[in-house]
Amino acid sequence: MSEQLIIRLASEAHQTIHWLIWSEKEQEIIASGELDNAEALTLLTEKAQTRKVICLAPSVDITLKSVAIKGNFTRQLQQALPYMLEDELASDVDKLHFSVLSKKVDQIEVAICFKSKVQLWLDWLEAAEIFCQRLIPEALALPSADETQWQALQQGKQWLIRESAFQAWSCEDEMLADVLALRLQQNTQQVIQSYSPLPDIPVGQWVAASPVLPMQLLSEGAIHNQSNLLTGEFAVHKENHLQLHKWKGVAVAAGILFVVLVVNLFVKIEQTEQQTLVVKSQVEDVYQAAFPEQGRLRYSRIKKRLKTLLASTNVDQEETGLLIILNDLLPALKAVPSINISNLKYTSRNQELSLTISANSFQAFEQFAANVPSRYNFEQGTLGNNADRIAGTVTVRVK
Image (cartoon, rainbow, N blue to C red; front, side, top):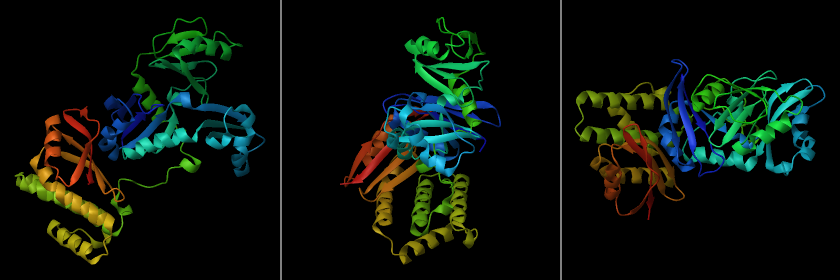
C-alpha cells in the first residue's frame, strides 16, 4: 500500500482528532481533516479499509525514559522492568503498560502509559472497525533531534518537544518556559528548531524551520518511525484484515451473499449493462478469494453455490439473524439509490446490525430511516461531510 492513513488520537473522547492520508509514491497529501470526537472515527472506516493505518498517541499520556541495565536486555529483565522503575513512578506499576522502543548494551529506551488509556484508544478504533498496526508517541514523529538541535511543534495549546531519538515530551503552552528551564539548567542556550511561530520566552535559542503543515510533518515522521506502543498484551497479530480467507464456512457465505444481494439491488435500479458486469465481476473476485480451491466461478454459479452451502449447513442464530435483517433492509436501500454501504457489523447478542454508509444528502438518511421496517429500532450516529458525500453510522436493532 503506497497510501497510509495517519490518525492523531486525542487524550479524551470529546477532543478533536486529526487525520491525514499520505502517498509515499507521490510524496503528497491525498486528503486530511479533523473529527469532532472519538465517535466520529467511523467517518474514517472506509478510508482505512484499503490503507495501512498508523496512529499517534498523545504525548501528554506517555512517559519516555532511558533505563540503564547491565549487559543485554533479556526476557527476565522484561518481566522485572516495571519493578525496576517502581520507585521513579507515582502510579501502581501493575496498571501501567511498558513498551521497550530500543535495546542497546547497557541501555534501553522505554515508553510508559496507563493500560486503561491504551485500551481506550484501541476500543475507539475497534468501534470504528479501524485496524491499527502501529501506535507511536506523537512527539517521536517530529524530525530527528540530537543534543545539537532539538525539534519543536505547537499543536493547539500544547508544545511537542523532541530532544533525541527516543526522548520527547509535551506540555501546555503556559508551562513551556518553566519546563525548559528545568531541562536546560546546564545549557540555557540549547538550539531548538520550531515548526511553529517562535515562542516569546527567555529559555533556549529558538530558530525557525521551513513552514509545513503540522499533520504532514507528523505523518512523514510516523511513517519512518518504527516505535510502537502495541507490544505485550496489546501486540498486533500478524493478519491481513482485508483478505476474506480468514473467514470460514457460513460466515463467508453470509458475507458474500450480502454482496450478491446488493448486486441484485444494483441491477433492479436500472444501472447500465456495463456497470452491472463490473460489479458482478467484483463478486466473482471476492468468492475466488474466499474459496480459492474452487477456482473462478461465474456469478450465476456463485449464487447457487451459496444457497446450497447455507441450506446444507447447520446455520446458527448469528448468521440467520444477519441474513434476515439484510433481506428486510433491501427495500429501504432500494428506496434511496444514493446510499453506499462501506462496512457492516452484526452483533447476535443484541440482534443489531451497524452499517457505515454514505449518501449525497442528509435527506437521504432521513428517507432511509423512514423506510426501515417498523419491527426494528433505528439509531443514527454523528453525520459528517466527506468530500461531496454525507457519511455516518446507523444501527438497526430488532425490537
